[in-house]
Length: 205
Ligand code: ADP
Image (cartoon, rainbow, N blue to C red):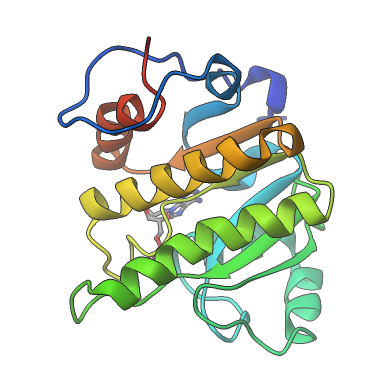
């Protein structure tokens, strides 16, 4: 099997650096809970993977298509019973043939018309509501793809800040409820963006 179990997904190690100052202070407990993983999210053997879905929840392209292909047809059947999902909200299903126990489906904002407050807040809501849905269901390890930055056109270099800020804020308030949050990057440019920006939100001492 080419699955990646949680204990093989390395913890991100904080390094000094980052391009701009932030207010975040070092928190060693949180450092142990963050991973950067480059690869296919459907291979992760963890409690929950997040799907960047669309409002119908009936499947689509990109990571959504990959998750539905790997999970098998029962996933679509369960999704069809959920009455869709509003932008910024999240709904949970079983993982079926995936090694992950659950899939948390969230719908990112469509940003092809540009990014305003509404899109920014919706993207933050995706991360926050996905983490809330995970913890409400007892999922302690959660992996995120780069929501909205593919077909939905949200600029990656802006999305990374919303992702990191929202996860940091959630962990500051609820770190006892989660063991690991994994940022799953799929493109070299996203790997680079996360490596550059993780130190701003999870800084070294
Ligand atoms: P959206 O419609 O929200 O923009 P996309 O699926 O088009 O969602 O893209 C979101 C991100 O998911 C992109 O960075 C894309 O490269 C990435 N991606 C595509 N397939 C996978 C996969 N199998 N695992 C992880 N990330 C993936």
